[in-house]
Length: 508
Ligand code: HEC
Ligand code: HEC
Ligand code: HEC
Ligand code: HEC
Ligand code: HEC
Ligand code: HEC
Ligand code: HEC
Ligand code: HEC
Ligand code: HEC
Ligand code: HEC
Image (cartoon, rainbow, N blue to C red):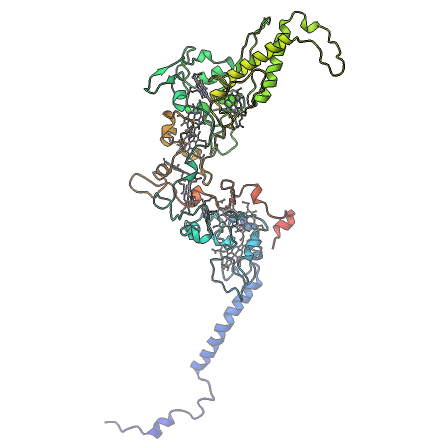
């Protein structure tokens, strides 16, 4: 058993001045302590001293390619000691207000409001995220950027569009409101026009009436219609296709610039996007079979040239033209009429050239022509409503018709609050989306598809359905203000002030 260690012996092991000298461990502690303080300061100092504004030690990732010019000049977008995004943690009393950053963006972009009277509570940077590399998109956004408001839309000041939306599916997104009714005021029957020869179709499905044959068409229109159908013989009934009347606004369906000349009013060349169909124009789509010609034989006039009533005039304007036309005809019928000397009338008196009976005859002819234009199914009334009404009172002798053609108002864009693009869907048959186009007998029937159609493809992939993108920005704009289709168009992109090139490069 070893002898016990006394307290004295133990005390002798510790030098009395131990606290005055540093040992090896202590020295290392001090050195490392200082090093730990100095190294980062040096690192920070050198980093900030070099060009690149701190990129050396805190890579924030390059900005997107559109903003590369200003990649190194942070203050183009940032305000010192101020968060840039309203999504960031904010201490507004100490740091600056994140909303200021939006004004920096506005030096170059308008970034118009999302809806009229939108409160200023979202910074641009809360949706347009930077520093994700030159190839990252600034505008391809998650649904959550939209549903942060749209899942509880009333809390965000919605008045008209107050239905909550969480994702694109039947249960979570409203039915399309713009296609409830057809605002158009043009008479038209798709079913009849898509049958060969456009026969009248009775309630029992029986067809009747005279057929329209290729040879009936005026010469200048014949080739265009002939080229569209399989049977090209002169006595073949005219067979129309969707493309006979509906052309994409990119001049599609194989209509070359050469063929485009066959359309009396021309069609746009391959310049626009091809999203929507070009508007229906009487001259392009209807005139070949529905000419507006009058041929009233007039006593004495041997020439029987037809009078083509110019289209798009109002009955009052046509009245004057008809008077001139029949006056000229009667004039031609009177032997030597044109050679008669014009006697300069005394002031206040008209030249007594036309005697009253001819005057009455002219008035009669004008009235006859007007009644056939506005009353009979063959004239303007075939396609138009007058003052919103279908039937027109007979026009009385000597009366200038007080009628107005109701604006046709056929929409060329149906979804006022969403985008659509026919070219993106070109591989799909027209009739699969416009199912009733071949059977519709009235122009007031809406043939634009509803959600049931879209969700067949625009949904998450499940078995053999779905798979096409279905995020909000696929179909919607954000910066549309009151015009939901316009988006940030060229005009609406304008910043408040224009820059000189050198200033533009140096915006800080
Ligand atoms: C083109 C505009 C633009 C330029 C130039 C730019 N940034 Fe940014 N920066 C942004 C945007 C937008 C965000 C927000 C990104 C997000 O929330 O995902 C951001 C975020 C940041 C953040 C995160 C903190 C915060 O405020 O949200 C840092 C740090 C940062 N930037 C540093 C820099 C530095 C340093 C530079 C210059 C070398 C720079 N940025 C240049 C647009 C820019
Ligand atoms: C110094 C001028 C300038 C500033 C400041 C600026 N941008 Fe840009 N930005 C541009 C230019 C130039 C383009 C490319 C032309 C275009 O698409 O309009 C562009 C493009 C964009 C685009 C379109 C990207 C695309 O893929 O189409 C978005 C979104 C955008 N900027 C957002 C912002 C945001 C958000 C800010 C503020 C954080 C900002 N910009 C600040 C000049 C600027
Ligand atoms: C709620 C999200 C959101 C906010 C906030 C937001 N944007 Fe946008 N921005 C979008 C979306 C989505 C698009 C693409 C669709 C479109 O054009 O509307 C876009 C497009 C843009 C474009 C490109 C337009 C184009 O057609 O190429 C610019 C520039 C732009 N935004 C600037 C801004 C500016 C400036 C602000 C702030 C004043 C801002 N944005 C705020 C969502 C947002
Ligand atoms: C700050 C909240 C907020 C955000 C973020 C937001 N919205 Fe809205 N949005 C509204 C409000 C509020 C209305 C309704 C306005 C009204 O009723 O007058 C609205 C209306 C709409 C409408 C219908 C009206 C129209 O003019 O087209 C669509 C579509 C729409 N938003 C799509 C989007 C999309 C897509 C996004 C994401 C890029 C988005 N919203 C982000 C608040 C927001
Ligand atoms: C003789 C010309 C003509 C032909 C051929 C024709 N259309 Fe139309 N289409 C019109 C006219 C005129 C309108 C506008 C009046 C209306 O709303 O019916 C119209 C309107 C439409 C509309 C939108 C209006 C609505 O009420 O929904 C769709 C969709 C449409 N047509 C699809 C088709 C399809 C699909 C075909 C081929 C199967 C076709 N059309 C063939 C002349 C034609
Ligand atoms: C290929 C020849 C052809 C073309 C092109 C054509 N139609 Fe017709 N349309 C006919 C024929 C044939 C009839 C039946 C006989 C008649 O009423 O003259 C008819 C009848 C009509 C009717 C009366 C329908 C009814 O219920 O009695 C209207 C309205 C009409 N067409 C409008 C139009 C419009 C609008 C266009 C241009 C978008 C057009 N048509 C283009 C051949 C055509
Ligand atoms: C075969 C059908 C058809 C006949 C017949 C017809 N129109 Fe039209 N009309 C149209 C179509 C289609 C439009 C719309 C597109 C356009 O302007 O060409 C139109 C447009 C108009 C407009 C412009 C309306 C607006 O939207 O503001 C006027 C005015 C007009 N027609 C007058 C007449 C008159 C007057 C007659 C008779 C002399 C007549 N039309 C005969 C088919 C017809
Ligand atoms: C994937 C479905 C789909 C297919 C395929 C399709 N359409 Fe459409 N069509 C639509 C939708 C949706 C609209 C409404 C878009 C809008 O005006 O906002 C529309 C609108 C129209 C209109 C009204 C005017 C316009 O452009 O908005 C006409 C006419 C039309 N389509 C004809 C056709 C013809 C002809 C074809 C075949 C070449 C066709 N569509 C193929 C979905 C489709
Ligand atoms: C047969 C499948 C199918 C149907 C039905 C369909 N789409 Fe699409 N749509 C597509 C595909 C595929 C694309 C292109 C790829 C993508 O965006 O994922 C597309 C693209 C789009 C685009 C973007 C076009 C662009 O390039 O800007 C819009 C907007 C759109 N669809 C709206 C609709 C609407 C609205 C409906 C319903 C009326 C509809 N689609 C019905 C398959 C379909
Ligand atoms: C495949 C295309 C498509 C997608 C994806 C889509 N929408 Fe829509 N949305 C539409 C169409 C089409 C309308 C009807 C527009 C009209 O009637 O003018 C509409 C209407 C709306 C409206 C107006 C509602 C009302 O009260 O009438 C809002 C808000 C809206 N969408 C928000 C969203 C949001 C948020 C998302 C993403 C979660 C989204 N949409 C995704 C096509 C789409």
